[in-house]
Image 1 (tube, rainbow, N blue to C red):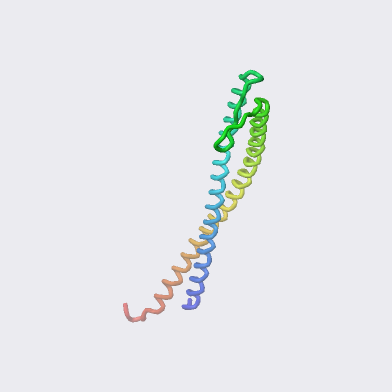
Image 2: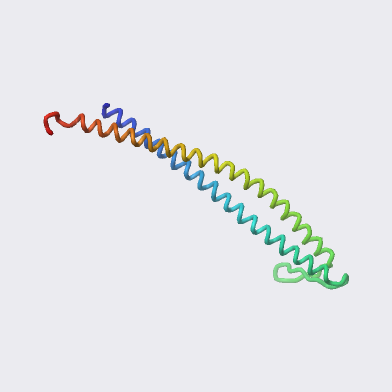
Length: 150
């Protein structure tokens, strides 16, 4: 084993370590995206629950009852049926968004598992290569020591 071989192995190890760090960062980004999706799902469920409660309360009111809807700093008079329709539309949009998020979360989870497996593979390769480089370095040091210096 020459010094050049050891240096080449060290360079290879550094490249593999960089690839490992890049892969690790990619996996962390995927998991952060999954957390964002989960948070968005909670927000949508809350919005649906809020819309359902609003519709239930509006249906309890008599047909000609005056209802006001907030618009910025003011309130606008709106027919009860229009407000019920708006809330129902909001529930439908939220349900559609929820279904889309479930599919997106499933895809992201599958990708995360594949990337995590790749990360573990890179980690095993790095450990193996590091052990090889350490052995090469040790042999090189032993070769460089004078034979009679023991």
